[in-house]
Length: 333
Image (cartoon, rainbow, N blue to C red; front, side):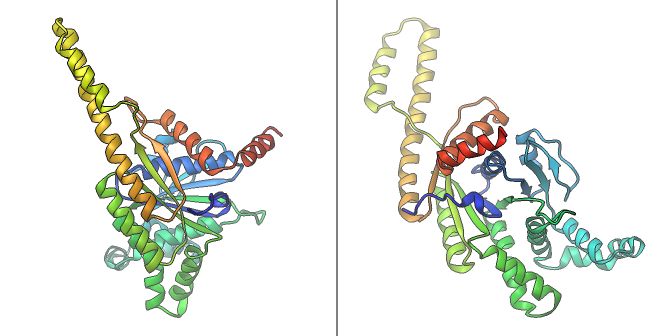
């Protein structure tokens, strides 16, 4: 097993990817919060425009492309390809009247809608811009950018688009800009792509495929594998059989119904724990990355409290105690 990723939070871009519904946004929020707690000026960017990260962190969603301050040291931004292209044109076309004429033209709108891969390329370009962005004092605006990437297939399009553009446009503006994106995405000192999965059949299969493609096809640096919603139980099959026999002797109908329902939930939990053990073992055997385990949290409604609990679990597994103490002392002045 590789050594603990003590340098994960020393990189500038942490990408969080995985199958839809496995908890990517939750892990991205946790990484953003840990980075902020370490004293890093952190931007959490999400690309789907849904604003799920902002909602989990209790941040009021802002305009697309605008950083909205949330927790201390952490801001949230929603990124979208066509808006990123408009922002880029705003930089290179300083005359607003001419810029508006370009943006409102039918040719431009058709080009944005029809050009294959343009939105993905501009989205990654926007992320690169934020990772490199400097303020008036010449210092970088963000120490770390955490990108909550879309689901597996779409993520691969985003990650692969800079290299595809570079292979098509070797020279000129697009060639140079796409090469800069490729350089950032393939530099292990700057970037880490982190995978998120649950220990179930389909997510594990997608994780295997994504791991192989990122490592072998895109040749991009990988960070950690987060396995979310792990069920663990001390209940045994023998204990459930004894409980079943006891229930048969209960005479009160209401009590018997309640006990039967509890028995059914216990059987389900035992079943999930067995499934998770099997697929967690497969992930350990086949994915050569540091593995971060996140337990299933029982909550009526998943929200900020659960994100904070997961943040503590992630921090405990990724950040050495000495570094946590140092960050706490520095905050205290």
